[in-house]
View 1 (cartoon, rainbow, N blue to C red):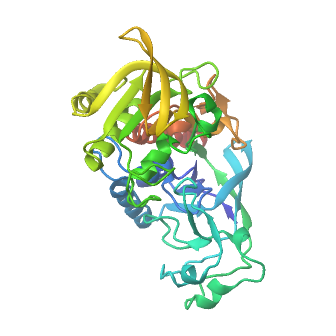
View 2: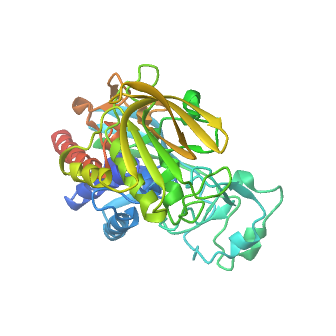
View 3: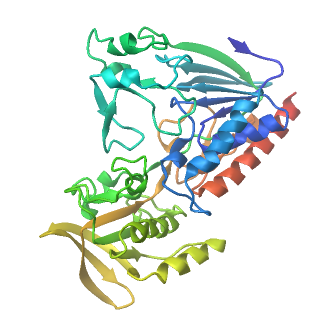
Length: 417
């Protein structure tokens, strides 16, 4: 299928930045095509338990955006899709989109009968692999489009139990992928970010000790839709932790890992400290930091959390974490006390940084990159970057950034018309 005159805006990535860019453009009168590699929209925002500034579940804000998507006839969403090829031309871009097969079609009613009989289990990608789910399932409670997905590669040979259980003829095990070409006037890349792998931090116990987890995993532990149903438990034995240590700048501001500050890690840990105190009031929480960064009105969050009984903020760099009897031993420098000391915890949360997705397998566009792997706008090519693909930032900043990217893309489209 060729999408032509008037040429639409192409938005790659349907996290909060991509959705915002597409909606803002469409509500300004521009046709927009939203391309997302996953089978549902929302990206990493929906994996949060709560987000700033209201500390509310992200589902509330995403629900509003989903309603806007459903009601706007100028937006077309291609799910399970990726950019296979992109060629610049005088009027914008000619982009080949590869759409993977969707084995569950729009007739799905989310009744769940297929999942009841599915014999195959797969790691739950929504919960970052911390639990297993059936191969056919609703990806998560807030999924849109609201239909089941199937990890076809996990199906046992010859199995069609899900097909036999479906009363709505919604499952096609032989579904095929397709490709279409889009003639776009401008492109917004909102491909998001990945957390820095804790396995690259073995000195801090990353990938070595079960009770050393990344901040993104801790977010899932606190969420009602997470692997523990929202209970903060130690992965090693399933018990509530009594001493929790948050280690800031885990791999960040470090020439051996990420040389930059990811901007939101301090606030994320402060937020997560409130999760602990709300759920386990007698727990001892210590946050070890290089600098406390809570810009703007978020300074109030820092002040409030720092004043909470049972919460300590220690200016100190953790250099090593080892297992010990009953928990974990942290070797650190207490800067204000001017000494090296050992501290103990039974759960450690590493505040790992944000890595732009463009630093990995980037889409085939003429993308400029800064020294840290974040994308740069290319106005001459009608190509713009939005959200954390462009710089580390929180949800509110990503929304503002995406609105600006949409405005720049609309201006570029008018110039090429």
